[in-house]
Length: 446
Image 1 (tube, rainbow, N blue to C red):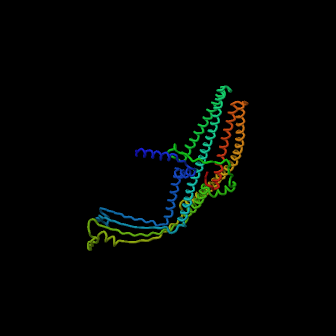
Image 2 (tube, rainbow, N blue to C red):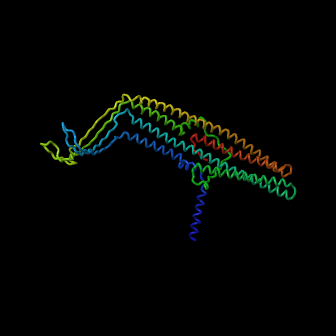
Image 3 (cartoon, rainbow, N blue to C red):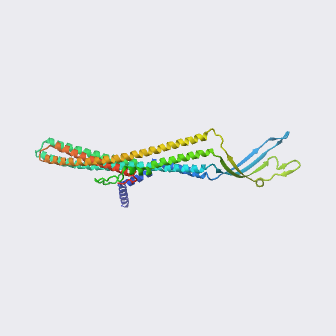
């Protein structure tokens, strides 16, 4: 019995997990955290962070150590003859060098890399914004499809009532069999429309799960959000939105950072015209061993060869130097590199103007869509009222026997289409308004 309760509890927990409904905020947060394109750009940003650390570390001295062992056998020339020279030698050195002057190349390289880091961070933010807008649009599409399902369900209920009434009147002989057949066909059409609407909801949920890159889409669902029929108006004018967008949109800020980076690179390239002053220090020692004898010196004075560590102690030495490298001619490469850097500045400035133009067009389009969709919504509402009234008259006329069931079905179809047009216009307006507010710096919310 205990095992049964464990299984039941586990299944109930599984059911609760499957019933989770995602809010728009949860969808956006999940997408920007797990999207592969975002992760890829974050890695690019980490590379730029490493480049910045490398640039800053150039201020530190370079320290290196070396050790060598050499052995030689055979004769070596000595005056007019030769002398046996079997020898083993060992040496060890430790040195350090540091850049003392190069017209601020290190500082300029750091500044250039800092701008690259900024641009990479803005690239990440741009991808996040794009994904957020896609998520918001798909979220609203799903809500729209669910509203269309409600409209279809209402149409099915009306068609069902029409069919039930036609069935009764046909049975008592007051209406022909064709009336019942038409009512049954109308009911079947409305059920088909409802099924299509339900499939569209599933399709939009599937598209949302794909955007989120969820491994399992079958249990995915979103929260229901009541969208009021009274639509709000834009909070700012187009000029105000553009001013804010130019200041805050990450693609514009990334383009500006890349201009600064290109200018800094030009300054880095110019430092190659200037001399470079480098300081070096070092310590070292060595050991020699004649393999054929333990003695060194002439035939009249032999001295016993010292061991390894005594020789290292006696042969220990230090050195320090300052070197100046003055560029004179390098085939004009430095001049060409400076010219290339200036061209890159111009390219970066054009890119900034392109980004601003894109933002300007997006804002203007969003404003146009807001105005157009709002007018469309108002027209759709009026059409809905008219078709609803026409359906009521057609239904009353049919009950009184003055019109046919075909007229009722046409009126009902017109009303259902008008309801769908209202829902479509409402959600189109809502998305265009959210998009315009997004460029104005207002976060995406429902």
